Image (cartoon, rainbow, N blue to C red; front, side, top):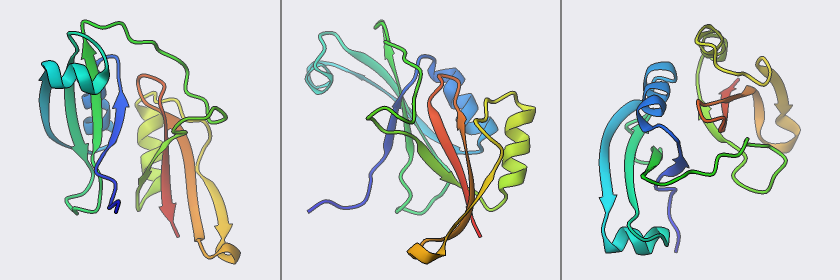
Length: 150
């Protein structure tokens, strides 16, 4: 009944800044932007006179790979909370790379907050293989993960 993930949506405070981060620092391709308003938008978000700028970025052209949807609500106050891995919610969005050391170096050079350097994990006994991974934050403090399978 349910198929693949269609997109992963993140609410951001400044769409232009977030697009620049996901495009220029992480290297995702900008797919386009839409503007949402009207009665359907009000019903969808359960807010009167709701307006939203929405951008889509993706690191792959494969249809199975869902894009990142960045949403900035226009003329609305956003409640900003520090993301926390230990709070019930989406804890992080994980991106794949084939060169985690290079990505880590690029993030550090761009003053991106990384929660650790890349760590090695061996889950072969559980059928998941080996990987290296680390967490970092986007401009709004949203926790993201970078992973390289080995």
